[in-house]
Image 1 (tube, rainbow, N blue to C red):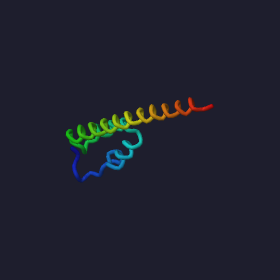
Image 2: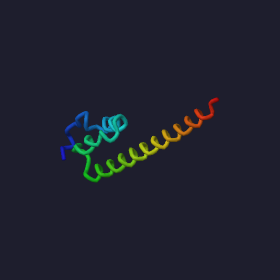
Image 3: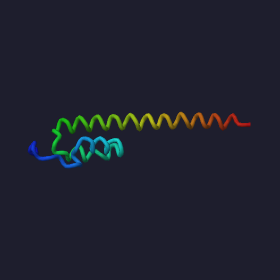
Image 4: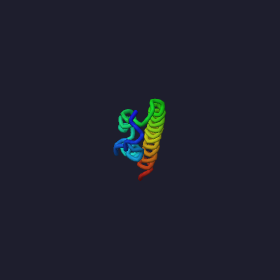
Length: 80
């Protein structure tokens, strides 16, 4: 663990981690796991949360796409 007096590098800061997660999702996991300022338990918790949220968003997106396609097909069938 680095000393508390040494400043954090820009890529280990919390704001950078949040921006990376919001931008690229699961591809930001290496930033979590290589971060020396986080404990192992924090890394596991962040990983589980990130994977869970990503799974939810992917599932929701697939379901929304399927519903919109069904509505689109119904509209096409109603055309004269």
